[in-house]
Structure formats: C-alpha cells, structure tokens
Image (cartoon, rainbow, N blue to C red; front, top):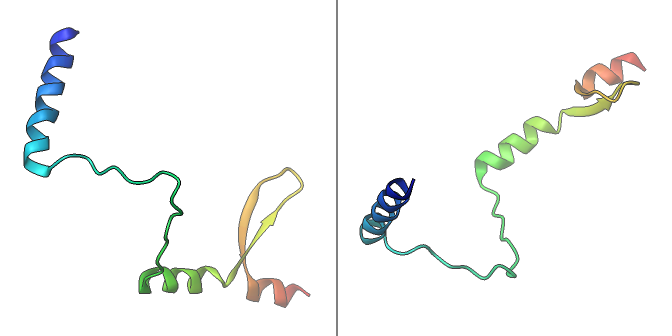
Length: 71
C-alpha cells in the first residue's frame, strides 16, 4: 500500500511541474455565475415545461401547452 501512495505522490509532484500548482481561491468569496448563450437557450427551452408531482411524490415535466389544453 505504501508503494502505491508513494507512486501517486510522485506522479502528482511531476504533474505540478507541468501544469503548475493548484489554485487557491478565497472560499468565502461569492461565486460569480455568468450566463452564456448556451445557458440562455437552455433556460428558454426549459421555460416551456412545468414540474408536476403526483400523489406518490414522483416528479415529472409537463409542457405548458398540454396543461393549457386540459383546462
């Protein structure tokens, strides 16, 4: 087991020289989430669905148009 750990640590040490040290960010800093075009398109696609829950607690998606037709 010690050989495996030693080999792994040696590998990570060599990779550090290739890719540089791990970045250390401020853990208390707020996460900045930037919306790109792909995310905006996905949100637009998903806006056509409503999440419903049945009597047993299962969740499923229903198209808004289908709900409007039922009423």
